[in-house]
Length: 405
Ligand SMILES: Nc1nc2c(c(=O)[nH]1)N[C@H]1C(S)=C(S)[C@@H](COP(=O)(O)O)O[C@H]1N2
Ligand SMILES: [Mo]
Image (cartoon, rainbow, N blue to C red; front, side, top):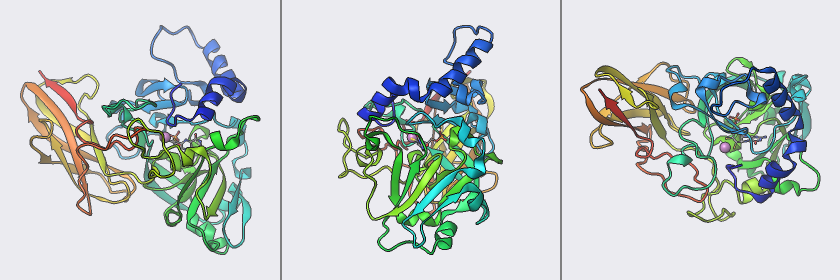
């Protein structure tokens, strides 16, 4: 099984004791399969814990790495929940944790009055709704020429999601403010860890710069529904503008710390190491996302359309900044035309849909897009190759060929 994070402990867990850990999930999956009529041998089916997703719109790499098809983002802004990608570094906790959502507890440390708060407590403290791009650090890895190990995501380990919950700054203020010396915000996932493995080698615990607490959200709702278990329900940390791994699912501890966590997923995992090299603390952490865009239509998979009027359509994100411009090329980047953003701007952490209507004659085209943020930073032509295959935002590798007949 390929993972985002080539860490031996985690691999061992998924390969070895996964049976015990995931017994509940696999049990449900097996039951669902037994009940279903025999399907013709086809693409891998959705595992039981995400059986509610739309099979037609998903690519199942493994039971813990499932991406949205390029044709399936839709032309609205928000990615429908049943098409949103899934990525688990560890088997998810048992689904019983969403039986009584309000009872889920999270410890808050590194504030003047540390406390353990339930989701019910948090719901009483504040409410905010925001849209953010949730994007796996390894999204686009499949386009790196170096072929770094890990899931070969194309564009679909990403989505634009509406979250509702309480701002972290509201919780911090209610608990007397940050303790002195806090330099990082550290979130811990609520997975049950197996005995006999050093927790640090497998736990999902991430530290991000402390200033992110000003924008961060503790979310219990996603796209208008209670946060699905598969996406981190009952409670998830959203760090806007930061790549997927920093958005801790089923969060059980939020700590403002002087040091980064010692967990392998932080120390050696998700580091921008040189190609072929393993990560270590001297390499930059995978934190903020870059300005990026890609085209989703027409026909990103079939690659053929009829001559005539065609809407070139895609999504663009600024990472941590708003966008000012989006360009489209029909000839692989030799010439560019400005396209138009569609629909309301849901804020600097959301993505925007864009469109360019063109009249196409029969022939071969190469569709590419490049976005520019409000600080005039253009999306790069090629992102630097790196050991983990992280943060690929290069417009050239995200281009695709179109035959017009
Ligand atoms: N607790 C916990 N949080 C987690 C993970 C995990 O395995 N456990 N995976 C991270 C990674 S690598 C990504 S890309 C996103 C995936 O979120 P999704 O499955 O809701 O799409 O969650 C992040 N948060
Ligand atoms: Mo990820």
